[in-house]
Length: 206
Image (tube, rainbow, N blue to C red):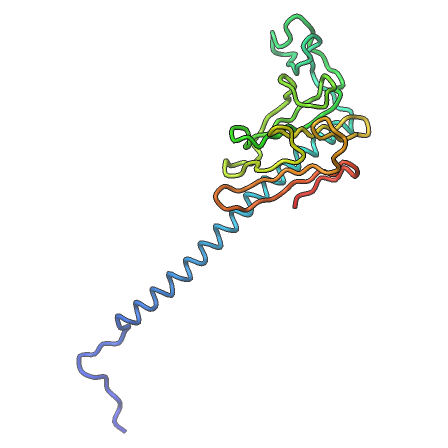
């Protein structure tokens, strides 16, 4: 039997059309992979931000439950530092049991990326200037911010835990059963909510 031969001048390989089809398939598959990777990264970023806010609220709850103290100025009732001179002008900076601990959040455009952990030193169950223990971002990145708060006073929600049980107040009110903090990822519409149940004390991420 005579072995088959390739036509003269024809080398083995891909034709131009075959190469174009292969490149098109590769581009589509790569595009889907990159898009899925980005969506996954964005979801993780939003979840981490919600966990961060929930953790800060639990910290305030735990401080009130365990009877933590804070350094407070005797004259101004502001948080002070005993190691810094002048932090309590005209008075003494000493440890005291605050009336409560809380988290201050805002949906206003300039403040929606941060939250304040504070001690309620004057017992009004609201955040006041000088009561900040620490401030931090709601997210490790600037892509997540507070988009909705309930209940809300102006653009603010103060979640305060009053020892010893502790009792829970939202903007100095005990009527609302649940507080909601909704976080949104910029440019995507994706959102997650942190909810605080006044009755059970449960703090959940949804």
